[in-house]
Length: 247
Image 1: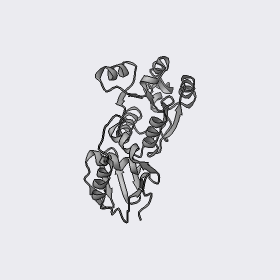
Image 2 (image 1 turned 135 degrees about the vertical axis):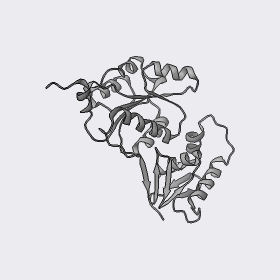
Image 3 (image 1 turned 60 degrees about the horizontal axis):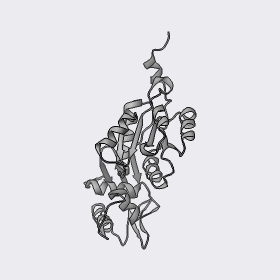
Image 4 (image 1 turned 30 degrees about the vertical axis):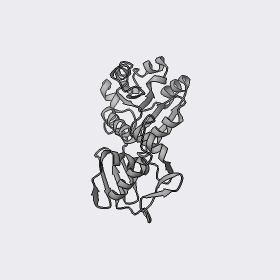
């Protein structure tokens, strides 16, 4: 019996890790932010910076999803996003835009994207939107692990739940975003400037100690002593490092 189109689509992609093609032009800061967010859940990432690389990536690598900077992308490449992937499924696309006004978002949707996120954005918001779109598009055909575990700390991105051991922590949205940023970069020093740019945006005019205040608040929630930290250590003159294991 010949399989119906929807039955063919259900067999693709093969069960396994999600492949995400990043089309972010030559923007190291944005690329790193997106990669840091998606690396934590086992996604396989490939970044392209030219239209030729993008076309080749779509044809040969067959990604499950594309994250694209709408304002830096070639129009013909965006148009190709509407072409069906193997099995007849349309390739889901998340568009990033630098404009927060309604027209910028409507333009992105008109270009064929499925979801729009305005730059700057919190990394966990991007991750949550990617996971939701992948789940809608592929059901259980791909592997998703939207929980970050670092030492005794567990961060459930989709359900907005943070646990330290057996205790559930009640964090504000900003505290969750800060915790996610640090934990997703466990072992690496995250500078105050990087924290500021990621959580408040590059155009935000902040008090000189706004980052330090939020770090103090988060440490209080985690019951983390800055003198003998279990989670967040201060690196004088550089920033903060999330410890990869409990101390």
